[in-house]
Length: 121
Image 1: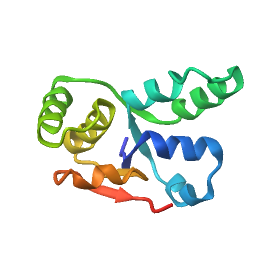
Image 2: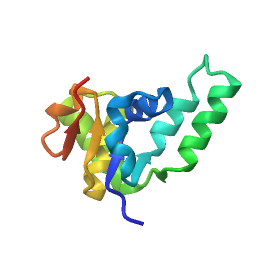
Image 3: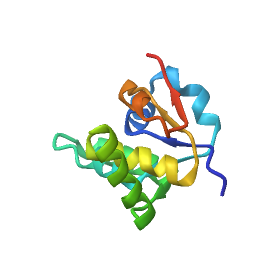
Image 4: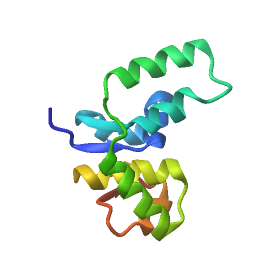
């Protein structure tokens, strides 16, 4: 399977909410980091309906699990940029697999190693 890009958690939220700005990205095959699944489903105010809808969305994505290469890259990014752990893991997944990251989070812009596609809301 070819993955065209890694979707950041916020892109998945926009898909879930039906935000039209992400419509062009729905024509591509995308992957996610396992941490995005944890972030989405771990939200403490999630309803049963939202949980079900999100699990369906996630089942259509290729999930990239934690591994030693991502772990080492995450350590390097945390040291260099002092970013939050979930963001470091997502960015590391993109870097390790050399797949662009699509996000609306401008905080990723400072990561020089990242092939970034920034959505302007």
